[in-house]
Image (cartoon, rainbow over all chains, first blue to last red):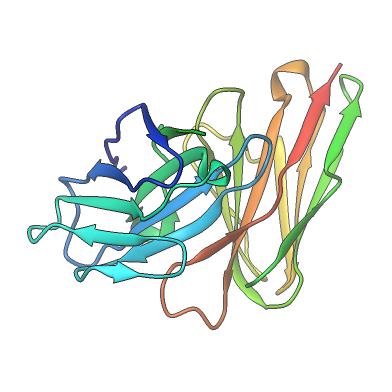
Length: 109
Length: 117
């Protein structure tokens, strides 16, 4: 299964931007990159997804490298409510999402 | 956004009993539903993929006779943990993919915490 690589943890201060990196070196040309986040004892929440171009939505921005082997999730102004585990997921065959270990984001007040 | 519910949210049962968990897409029809399991401090692990009206596809290492999945309608999938044992205690999460989705966006339920005594 396709696995992504993310740092185990990152820390940020409230109101500052956060850049969460992800490596997906085995990605193929038609695989989407998905980002979800999860709070303790809750189901994952969709954040953003992309294929080749950079993407923006109300929650975040996704910057995808030109070779598509890495991407960066950008939270423009972190809030305490953004503290969560962020999963970068490379879609696999049969539309299956294989979750890696994710990045635990801590936001300091 | 699309909403997925799970019932019950929490269940405690005795060893040897069976437990059924429901997953419903409340405001959309789901061609495909997925079942995940998550142990404490670990990531989600995909257990099976279920398509409405057909048999579920189980991931390697997941016992299909122990984890029975039924996807009888476009809005409901059930997972039954048969003869549950303490090692089955976990957080079970379902997700659903909309029939109208042009890409693989999955909407996740809030999860069901199963504790087997």
